Length: 207
Image 1 (cartoon, rainbow, N blue to C red):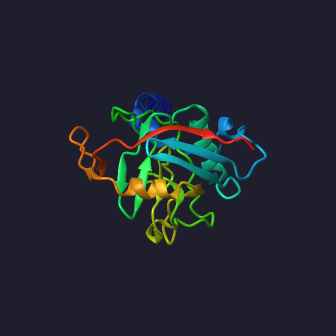
Image 2: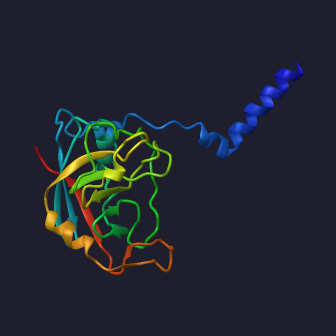
């Protein structure tokens, strides 16, 4: 009886403790909203409209279906509209998708499974998912590779999932990569553009 009471107490504590509950969360493998976007198209295209020009990206649902469908969920829900490219490192990456125009972090959905072993490399003008140290922690932030970033590819450890390639607007990314950056005085984030680089809208291009 005492053992049963102890087990019951531990279950109750775990359900009330957000840290313990969060530790048990598993990354998702499906995104129904994104899956419904051009369901039979393995190479959907999206347009990024920025204050520096437009970028067209072909997504690789054939190689990274979980990542693409997750990304398309945020696109369909207009979650990327009016956000900032908040981190830019010249000759390395242009990162965005996570902060609004007031530099406030936007709410994320669930984390997704890492698909970095899909054969796609972090080459110049590809788009990849940003994540934390945990390999399966990608949610909404993404980045464009500005060179062959071999250090971001999987080796003995997990890499960063490539899920698309820039088809138009490479010159726009080149211009973004050249803007002046600093440490943001409000957030303390480094490599933050001095002048806002804005992602006005992301939309799916009709087949």
